Image 1 (cartoon, helix red, strand yellow):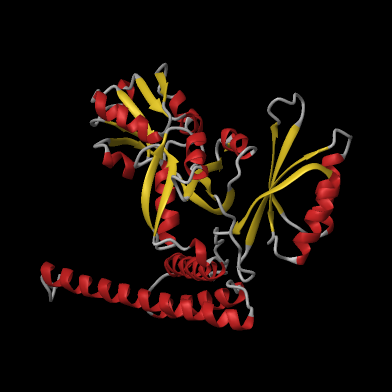
Image 2 (image 1 turned 90 degrees about the vertical axis):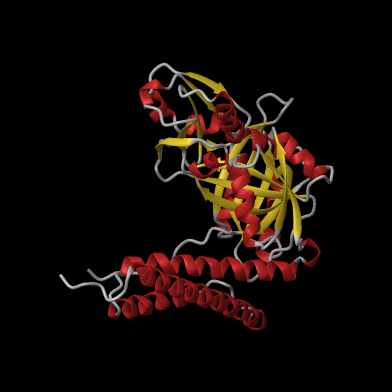
Length: 391
């Protein structure tokens, strides 16, 4: 076996040099993506061109194979690069469409203390906008909304649905009454862990602190722990704080591993959610609605109530089908104080500035007892462009 030509320190220095070069090149690429966005303003082309993305990935796979890089590695790497480019261009176009809404520093309210899932979502969302945060912790969803309504916060971040536990009804109920507008969305992967003050065998756990939503999302794993006591908290951050304060090895919390580090907790079991592909969708609310650039995909959230006649809801949904509007969410919630009446929430793909959506809203208005647009905002879920890989 031949001796290495470089010692370990020299190898690490070379790796560091290459990493720095990669960062420099990624920054250069990001600047060029901004120039692409500027050129698309002139030609009115949409931000995403998936045929172009597919051709780009196919070329990169070929170039990568010549240099000994497998196709999946190249695809995974450049899906991340493309997603960043799309979101960076969208943020730029939105800043032009909403010059009064650009904050260098924003006050943002969210559920829980630092380290809660809502806090992590807020940080990720505004990092994309290159906006620094003044973080405002709240104990309830109602308080998150109130902070924005009273002007104490510029934005509020609220979880709206989870792939495992479904819709978060308390948030939908708050949206019935607020004057705020939905101005953005974010989908976050959720990696639930069981956290304790020190390394502990699972069979020793006797008590769990958790927010109800994570507890529900991890119910199958928790059932394997036997008869443990569950103490509900207002947020995952409060649950982790309780476990840290008790410093009892038989007490655990559900939270993310990174957030657990803030409280000195140890993850004794990772990936405990019922579904391994576990995501939560968050919405961002503000006092003022935003204009969505016509060059980027938009989503509109509508709340409406129909007459009590048979088929009333079906007539409304047929309006969407007739005009080719894709509905991505339909949720019903009871109208508080009016027994047996339902309020319907719809998420549809479309920009309310478009002639098509104006016509759709006019037709829906004629068919409903009450209708309100809760917000039109950029779609920030960048679905990866598919590309065939030769075996």
